[in-house]
View 1 (cartoon, one colour):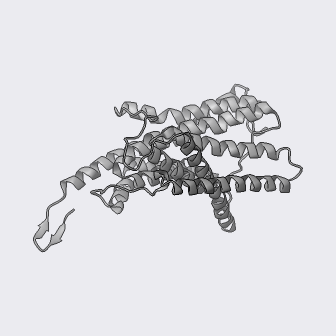
View 2: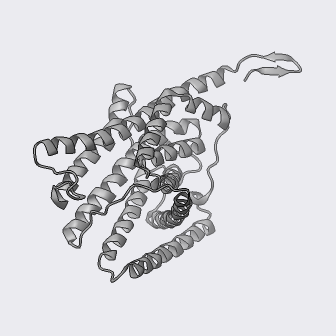
Length: 340
């Protein structure tokens, strides 16, 4: 810090300069991961289906399955998704010589707990209740955006009434995202940014996670879910518990969609969703109360250690990092072009 006090001009703080340099390096690293993940996923989807259409295998525009049938489409999509999401982070770490094991335990701190099976169940129910509340929050935000004339892109469902369809959808849209997205955004990005403060790391990793979805409807929901998963990962030290929460949230959504296929009408389907959400919400509230009553560290707020840089300084360094700039711009670009 440089300025004037009663003793005269203060020299620049070398520690602050070093912190800015380290943050700039880490910000560019995570920005490149976020940028390449978003870009590769979008490009691969376009290129694969373009090539398949040239070969006469795929017929874009015929149906939601691009003429491949439900099983063919889901298998093709899962391959694209696994490469697009799973490859950039480890590849970026490899070429920058960063030896990161995304599913290793975080460095242990006084705030962390080593949860037993019961505590993990309570934490997961508490997290699911936040997911439920996030759905309501996202719905209200969308109502406001709709009033402004903004519409999210269509979100087709790839479920049909067969058990095979349900199993494939669970693998493609619940299991794969839980493992790969948590690997990238909690295992790599949160882990790298943690050196600059837990709260800072939580917010930035969750923001990048939300923007990756490039969907005006999913961004608010994904941001809250990202914060929840990041909090759990930091409090327990285990990314795999965040993976479990991520999976359960997507799994619950798919089961409700599947059950809705057998509902007599939309009203019955919505009633069923509200009943399930209410049960999960109550169980989550009870879980939180139990964790509070037992003075469990998992429900205590994050206590950041003293940092040389202020939050404003860290934000300034982050937003001026080229990697972060191109990542945010790319995500906003895809969000804008998919918004009607």
